[in-house]
Length: 70
Image (cartoon, rainbow, N blue to C red; front, side):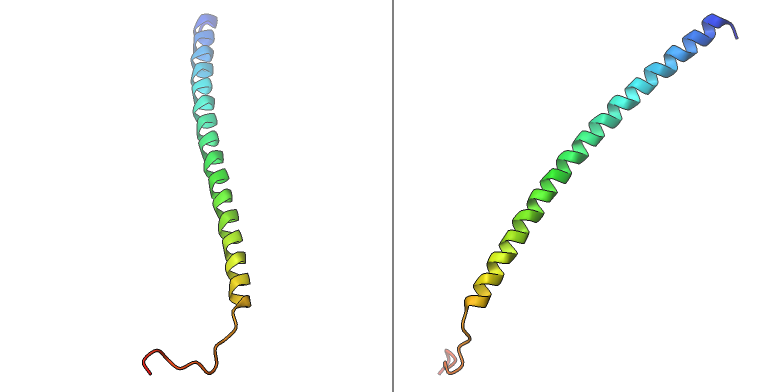
């Protein structure tokens, strides 16, 4: 293999690697956006659960109330 052929081969490989790096960067960016969305959703759900727990704790059980069918 001549020097020129080797150089061409290296340039082709470099070009393919550049394309692969760009593709991987795009995928990592998309995954990070999704992770950020899921973290925000988890935070909102945790806050809602805390609110529901406080509401449930503030309720007083009704002991002597008749059922609605009486």
